[in-house]
Length: 116
Image 1: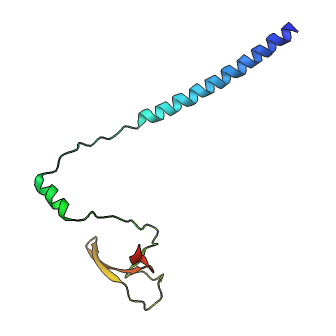
Image 2 (image 1 turned 45 degrees about the horizontal axis):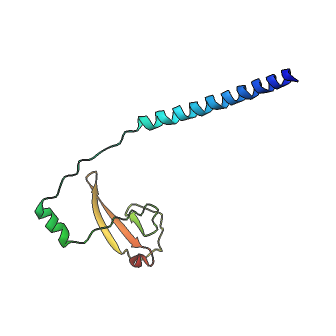
């Protein structure tokens, strides 16, 4: 009976030490991952009085990136695939230069985008 109890205790301690080793391994691995990333700190420079005054006169702007084209849809003049009904006039046209070539983008607003 005593021998079985000792064997059971040894088995338990062996399993417990394996689990503890695994936990320590995972913690060390996570700690290494955290150490590899460094925090970037930017110096905060105070604004000049002129800049403060100019900023107080205008409203803050909001930048909305519409990566999945839920707010607007645009296509340039070389695209054959039509996502908008043919003959629908664009809401506005952007003229840009890409690699020294002029390209026109036809922009169509999605319905109710002005309420967004």
